[in-house]
Image 1: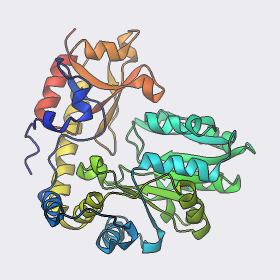
Image 2 (image 1 turned 180 degrees about the vertical axis):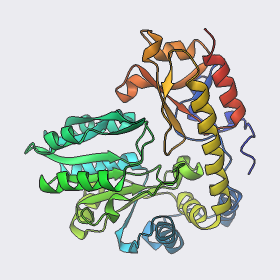
Image 3 (image 1 turned 120 degrees about the vertical axis):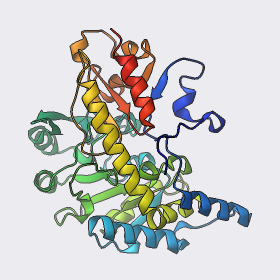
Length: 375
């Protein structure tokens, strides 16, 4: 569990590093970490590969992985998940696009919060739906939903679905019970289904409690909760996530939307998910501490650079940086000219910002800070 190690990812053709291949730019954009997987995950993948047979495996037959999800949700969120509620998907992005087709017809409205990560913002247009944006606003140093705008959009007869991101990406805010109560009230009164992307929910860095949407009493019959081990345990490349849908009718609609199009998750992904949720607690807790320390360091240093401003993300390994104080036309170009490659704010709907991934060895962050500090 040496998170200070800097690994050479070039043999794996890692997307993050391929973008700036051959350039003196530190990549800190796409949301995967630079941490080697916990050893139990590596061991189970070796064991599975040594079996030598990789034929069809129906995910619902992989009882250890299903049981692992049930145990994890009970332990982490005090949520009693029935195995029948679990629907495996090859990523949360395919999942919320499935939801877009399942609960919203062509030309009808999908509500999304902004800023948000690009695939989520793209979902309405991909599915020929109308995009209705709810901004996040800054309140007492924390980003939160503008509930007045959510009410306005939800009240439109054409609005059918709200794709929510909790914890929020890129801001890192974790929705409170009061906020979730209000969202539930608004969506239920107007007949809007909620699809909640909670892929970062296991990476809460502050002393807070995450409430899964479908655990909320008022949303259990009107929501889809999307989760995965991928961000938390750095196994996104294995293409495995899951939706938890308590309501039978909602679940059937969701599954039907992907029939014949969305493939089963991989056999390796099932094994890795089982190992992550049952054998890696020490690694998981140590990583959260490391990320917390990285966050606190980066926040302090970013806020000492003229023209930059950030607020502490309550969760994720991502920092949303306001660069409007620089007074430059292109914030991404400003960063890249200094040898730093964050996620461009324009891709999230906020061109004056950029997003830094701090899920890496602290020495990388020190180099990033040094480079960004150049006048």
